[in-house]
Image 1 (cartoon, protein in one colour):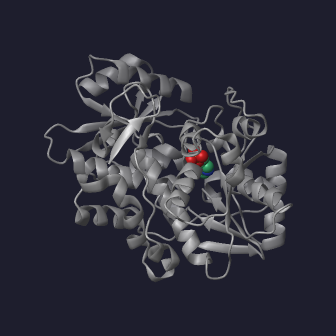
Image 2 (cartoon, protein in one colour; image 1 turned 60 degrees about the vertical axis):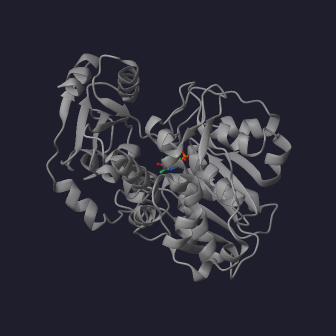
Length: 427
Ligand SMILES: *Cc1c(COP(=O)(O)O)cnc(C)c1O
């Protein structure tokens, strides 16, 4: 499979090169040249197949022969070796829980898949690749955990000192092995700037790569969620819609890829917090990126969603075609807290702020459409402990794995300037 840049100014590349490079030289996102629907037999009999088989069938055309089938099967089965349950909350509402992975974040799937692909591609090189990431919270933990123990790859994570939650910090700093945490005296933007400088610096002797969500190996495996949910529901419900709490729009765009592969999804709802660039675009066709505003669903505080260009490409930049299968709504923190309370009172279910935004999107859509809907629960509520406990006025139970991690010893290296990072990378 070849991938071309959506800026149309770089050569088409192989899957391997797209994974190793991340972004095309013209700064465009990579996009597959063909999308071939899966067989009707598979789609109509999904409940007869294991999750591993479904995921392998969904991803194989995008990897083609660049990873041998047996290895790819192994990678897929390690990537998804946890549950993806749909929990029914109301007669016409279910939630797809994507937080059963090792860091309790849906980003685990993309990070684990990318780590294993990169490990495979780099296994024969004597020089290790360094994955360099800046994190404001969840991404770092998922990436660190996904790459833990992968041969041929070292991971260096920059995080802002004192600006991530205790759980998130421990997830980054207690793993050891090939994972190093650099604790930056600054804010998230300082971490991000240092990472950008390193990518542009010819004096850094090590090979660097990035593991953010624009990488095709992090984006594409998110298709699996929609197949797994559909498999659990299609015998009882026709016309299933999905509401996806969205920030960079990678997750929902992967859902649209699943639909292109033949999964009969009726409609997509992208639910956002007050960072409403896409909901505004859907109203008037004008795309006006803005500076992001902080909210309680902070993993979605994105003013210029990087994957939206892929969604437009999927619909040949036709607003009308997009509107026929996609709606997008924005919600305030007040409404989000109100939804968390209602979900708890009506269904005895604890949603995190991101899931609650997804719930609101679905509720809004269902005012005019009588269809069964699933909202995606993208993080475990314990990751947003303060907001959840104060909103519901209730203590929530901390899972065993998290309790264990909190007792582990933090190991980080303090840095303050770009020169500190550079000398760390070159030593
Ligand atoms: C990253 C993230 C999102 C947003 O996903 P996108 O693919 O960027 O739209 C939503 N919820 C949580 C908890 C996240 O970590």
